[in-house]
Amino acid sequence: MVQFFLFYRNQTSLTQIFKMNYLELLPASAHTDAILCEHTKRQKWVQQEKKGFLRYRNPYLQLANYPARHVDCSGETVIIGRPDEISGLQRQQLTKHLRAFMPWRKGPFSVFGIDIDAEWRSEKKWQRVLPELPDLKGKVIADIGCNNGYYMFRMAAAGPRLVLGFEPSVQHYYCFKALNSMAGKSELEIDLLGIEHLSLFERCFDVVFLMGIIYHRPSPIDTLRDIHLALQPGGTLIVESQAIPGEEPFALFPEETYAKVPGTYFVPTGSCLCNWMKKAGFIDVKLFCTHPMSDQEQRRTDWMHFESFTDYIDTDKPHLTVEGYPAPCRIFAKGRKKI
Image 1 (cartoon, helix red, strand yellow):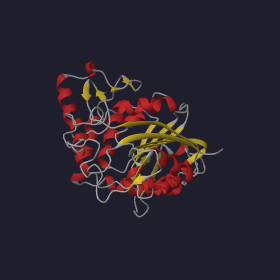
Image 2: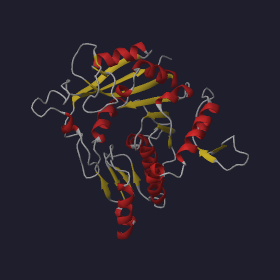
Image 3: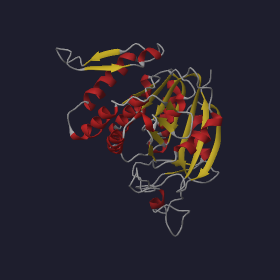
Image 4: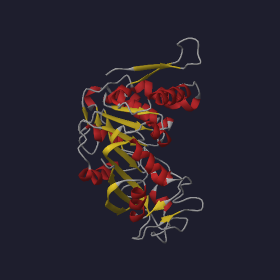
């Protein structure tokens, strides 16, 4: 794969050199210069020698010394390396470095036999999505808010040409980099970009995944329009969202927090989400799954010690959140961009 090298143009020497591998796989419609500019700025930012960056960069650099001989992304647990590929002492060191990325939100992973039980049983979500997926083989895909890349690794089993993760969080960015430095999946890439950068990727993607993101956006229809712009004609959007129960096209707008999360804006019903997608220009919109949330799928673990689902729900009235709002369910929808 051709590697693109870029430098910070305000420097008189090539002291700031960064590497991108995915630009050659994007069509001519991509706003390449602007993507390069944003990438350069974000890389300059993340390369700072500050505690907040070193906290995650250092364990990534340590884990990058352990390329796995065996990688399997086809099952519920993403397997990177077998237990017999490392020594007992190395296992202790790897466990220490992996735990530096806590809290682990998505999983499960098994890294050289070290089982990472994340807060979310993400394999359950993937099983719900799987029957509705278009063929991913040879496709260029975006995973918006990809976290540590669990779903990207699962996509890799289908043989995509490229899966590009958009992830502005330093913790999640370096966690994915660490995992993939061991897994060696060249078709998987990540950049420190957010959903607000999607307009730079005009008509670039065959499939876009937006999982667990849209209720964090203050303007969900504008977000969906940006995704519509980023899709190739005929491309598919897969959306998964927190939701409130009900058949009517309503959305909850919480006063401060929803299930203790302050960055929550609109929490839709299934029909509301479908209407948003239609308003944004999608066709063949389909709500294909709705299910209640529970502590069987989201919970505290040894790899995530903080509050989780049961802490967000009224113990006396489990149909309500601690704020008194309807307790959340999860909804899944898909739509297509017209050819």
